[in-house]
Image (cartoon, rainbow, N blue to C red; front, side):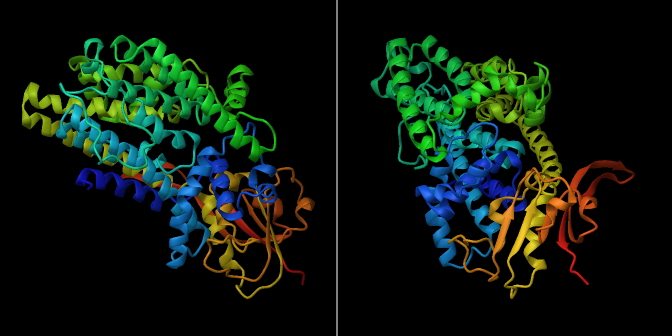
Length: 526
């Protein structure tokens, strides 16, 4: 059974999905891969119709995560269709994202139950409260990014758990979504107390970390290294054991990703290896932007954790348990700081570890300064989190004009129309939410839609090579960020607004919007 703090985590994550159902360009590969697997199937002819065939991207990405997600989503989507709940592509997209959100939340809940054993119930509850009220992690928990496919593995497998003098038993209350035992064990099993069961837990955890790194995000190796060092220093495992398990896990993971992804890409490929070669060896990561080395520590961490940071630091200073999970996490972030291109999601797997430290720090106030001061501390942090999350969520839910415009496109064509329609979606619209899930009247119609709403055949084009007005003569509809280019032949029928920022006024912060994406219909000849 779930307790109230665990239910809160699930409800808040679902709330993020429902309020912000659209996706951005960085999510598009995995989102479309999962959609294509669901809608088209896995046969070789079907794969040739997948989105990645026409839009492969700069580097190949793995299909393993989308494949698992689509298989997990399929029965839920089928049940929802049978109940008449899937009435549009958007509702199918929301269902897919809710499944991924549930997987992410399950790993956090399982982690919190191990925290309960290691630190006590108050710290576990505070950990869940901190996580639920912070914005970034739960907002992205449902996002179809490779990082978030790896997160349920990395977040639950990566910690050196600290125990209050006893070993956490493997009970039946842990979530079935966990693919392996969830913690790397701490020093209570050190040298003279090495137990067979605990060693197996640690080695299985490192095996799953290796799988997540090789298949989904290779930067996880930078987390694995300090965690392995800590386990070796504590005498929890031996070097030869780590090497043997690491080698076996690497070979198995390579076989998995190369086998699966070579089928979908039609050539022999290891996507993560190709990505690292492109971004690190050839130096293309800087093409996406360069940040100073201190960026994660002076910008990302304050935005992610807010007022919880001092308590995480306090916990690492006074509690050896927190040092054993906090120091490797900071070392991981430090290693990633050596790369020029930086995004907070690259170290998303370390967020729960640092939240555990912060929760422990808040709870330590009770012992150091009394229960009343502890209550003031947690209330201040939670209220601050809530205020910042509210601002960020409002901005984010209004920042997908391409998705909103495309979702409204069907309303402008009579459902009785039988005329074929050709639609062009430009790159700006595609980058701001216009996914394949949102294509109305697409042929062939995906099986998960309850029924087609039009007998017309609609074809969609996302070519980026069209630049002159004459290039668009064959199109009936445009979803575009450049209406002036087409005003001679098309009429504007709808506009999607994007969030521009907050402006300070006499009554406080005021949101500012601007027109960003236009739906245009070809003007009929008179």
